[in-house]
Length: 115
Length: 114
Image 1: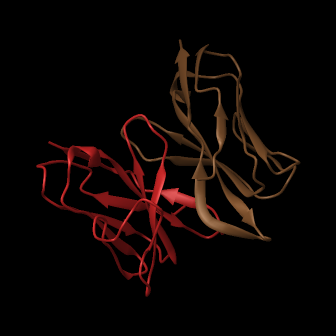
Image 2: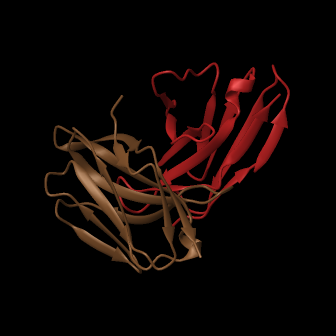
């Protein structure tokens, strides 16, 4: 199936540091979504991106839809302990101008923040 | 976003039995989805459940093993049939709500098969 390559797989950082993670694909995407999943919970939508080049912020989080439509990044500024969790990128692949309905997920980035 | 609930939140089941998982949404939605998340893994789509039509299954998932019902625009069920330990996973429902291509997830059902 279609693959999203998400990196890094895990990050161990100190509180206050900035974090950056990204996803790349060989396919063109119509939509990029970033989710956070905490233990025992379902994924929570953080940011949704719908246009190439779009840059969107949500508090300390910033995400961009790559201009080639094949990549996206998520930045977290001034990390805090509650940022701990698994971050997933996901997206809809372009299929002839429309979205192929299946949402494709990256492998996830495990974030650990040391106080 | 829509409020999504799932029942049960977790269960421990015996091999060979079946479990039906319920997904309830507080708003009417056209598209509902069922995912499986195996331990330490990402999410994999099982099927798309649209009201008024049969569910559409992804490669590797079949209706006999994962029958799905979608009786109305706010509710769906997923049954995991004839379970084996390999079925131990988190099962998640999601909905496409307000904005096309944007999905919101329920809290998940944590299934352990002994």
